[in-house]
Image (cartoon, rainbow, N blue to C red; front, top):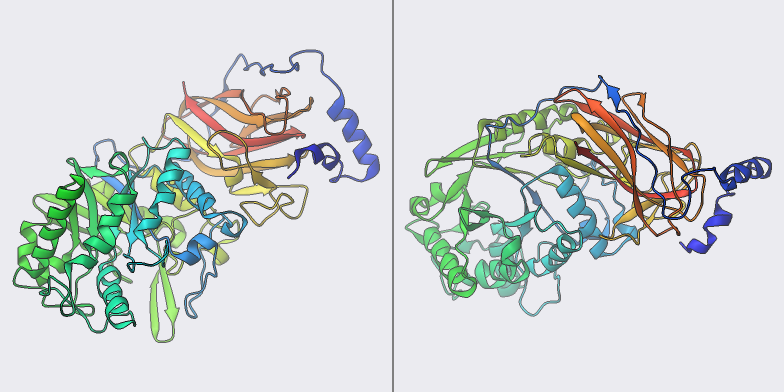
Length: 538
């Protein structure tokens, strides 16, 4: 929005009489602490909160890595249409991708992934058709430059790494049939014994038209590595899409990809294959570094597979595909299915646990922040539920610094019935693109009495709270209320503009060790923008 209009907009929330009274309050200047550039004084004493919940989380003895798959189909990046045959879609995202660009899409999901605490995101690569535009369809690894750019813009290169999850039936069989027969699909099947592509195979489909492009798009410093080797998952090579997998044929394909990665990029892939690879070709056990059993519908909801003395876990938070004769359902059970899966993979100290699937809306397995709606609509108790569960089983269930984006709230109270600024979400919260460093969004047009609230946030011991704010006005005030316990009311200094940002102290709380909390950020007096807030352990 044009920020020159922000002053007049402050009156649009109230009848004329009320607006006059509000203006008198907003524009009255307190006697101290409100000059340009001033910072609000931190309270002298901590607020003691003995409430909160004790939730299960990773034990410090469990040191394995945690990652998630991530599909980036064209529909997902564009914000729909969210249609998969007649299957009902529950887990629609809070982030409204139709209000932004593909760059915005990646920037939001980098924030969500970092908030979840995962070690890596395993992107679903599906190859590309040579000579096609970028991207040519969902899973084109050439499009991953957008993810790389977002990680760097957000300053998160030290927090989030990238692995490949190769959808082998799509990258090999389907792409071969698109190129060779102009049809796509899984018939004819892919012939693993054909190394050149003279028949119905060809090593180039997995390497030249897929993983090579992955390494071209993702620089070495952003690759997730196990023992110095970049992690690559490979999905099924079963008979529905492949033929002649045995006699060392599948193993030879992996050897070829490894040799090409080493010679062209000096990378030695750490292959974790679906168990079908070793079942169909025992020689793969001498080439692969690990194997996983994926999950079943309805069971098993998690698996642990061992290879070379290490255990590899896989799990899923939920699943729902009901269409025609298909009736495949894993009940999320208010998050308990996911907690149980992580407790039996991460909690069993698997070397690596992979979770399906951060953006898998089409099968209702998504982990992303969902729309703010009731359980019957979303199958989530609140929008950030799966992100919070992931963080509980990450290596930092109680992060030293917890950063929470203002636009990400689980519930809100806003004086307007719709998002008047038109970005990020389609409910009442007023969200706009921010000009603050790192990009993203902020909550704007904040009026007196509005608030945002988050559920089950991990804070323990002494936590210092800070808020990132911007306002050209004087008179704005805010406070935190945690588990119903109010912190100090903070006078927000004028920062000089609606997009001139300053971080202010907002009080210190003391919490019981190992607890999670309901946090409400209340705007006692409006007339400001808010970008994010942080809780930092003292």
